[in-house]
Amino acid sequence: MDACERDTPVGKRNFAILLLLARLGLRAGEVVALTLADIDWDAGLITVRGKGKRVAQMPVPVEVGAAMADYLRHAHPACASRRVFIRAKTPLTGFASSVAICSLVDRALETASVESAYRGAHLFRHSLATHMLTQGASLPEIGDVLRHRRPDTTVIYAKVDVVSLRSIALPWPGGAQ
Image (tube, rainbow, N blue to C red; front, side):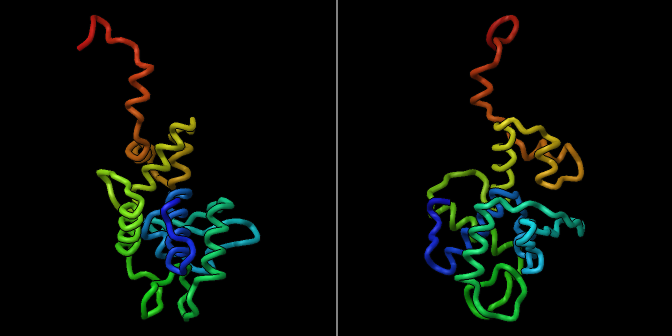
């Protein structure tokens, strides 16, 4: 996030998108689909239209709301589209697909010199789940945040910190193997 340029219209937009991915665990397609009507500023809620036509309301963390408000007030281009996030080049419409979000994430990771075997927007969902796990959240709690239908899906996202586990692991009975 620190490497994100925040003083240009594109930088403000990208920062708000990255925060939605990182703090709420939104999927790229969910970010693309956000409309201005999906934000309830008074209640501090955002309506997320997810996979399988599922709709969920999520609380908007202050940091995310501030970044979205900054983008919408100071950088959102005047256009007919009701989408929250608008392309920087004409035609001024919402993004055509989640591929644009994944490309934006890849550029941000490259700019920040983040080395990862995984690329794209889903990296943020995995990172959020792992962070929540290390902070003591249960798998059902993580599944609720990520809006998973089945508990076994959450296990895929919540990667265990193997290095930390080695420091507390008991020796294998019968010696090292």
